[in-house]
Length: 291
Image (cartoon, rainbow, N blue to C red; front, side, top):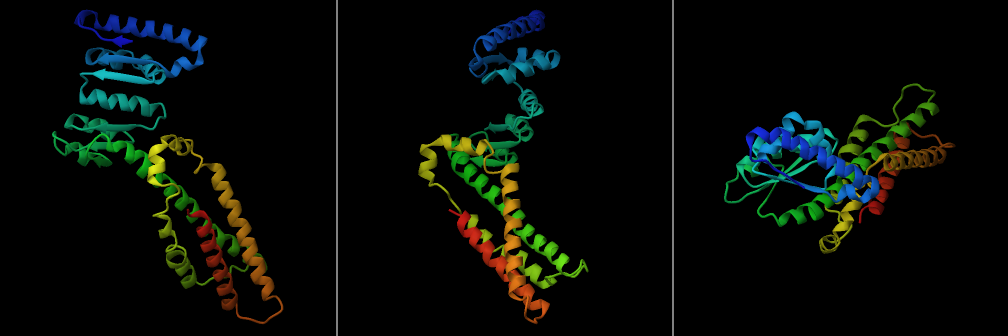
């Protein structure tokens, strides 16, 4: 469907009629075939888009959501930014790609902006989150670098959450053994070394982790759908890491306490044994999780 007008006096009326006609058609298509919602495209020019955004913004928003593709001809930089704003208001994540200075507002409005440095200068490249030399590099940016970055970020965030919980749970268990006296099992130096050195250095290995080769990802782009579905970072995965940290804390604490149950020893000795068990256990988990 094409929405375009040439007579200034009938722009508002024609645009309204076209939108109403489109929604009447869409209601029938969606009612008869559920797949019709994702196979609709429309073309709109700058004049019609200005009327639609100004007087029929709600109706045009519904049109944009129901459509799979929209081609906007001769639009201003502000109109490009408004289109991105419409999708963001509907809780969509937006990616804007531009190669000229008139795309700066659109890129800044989007959640992620990609600038193509070319003949029109580097203004859009400086305003974007990512800059590429040619449009064909976008596939590699999303499939390879984007997917690797997503996988590494999800693992690092949940692993950091897990390694901190292990020590916290052990401290809670020790508070019951010590009669809730407020005494800490670990001294400040040990905790600082635990977070800064012992468990942070192995994490750097995951920065270069790759579960699949770049050639495999490029040949099978549908692999990206697994990341888009949020399978690697969601409440269920966080609950799994939470349960793992609780179980591992129980194992380390029970084994360490029972090992010294019938012996006289200093608390510093027990704390070093418990901390060493945590460090070795977390290193083993890191080895299992990295590819």
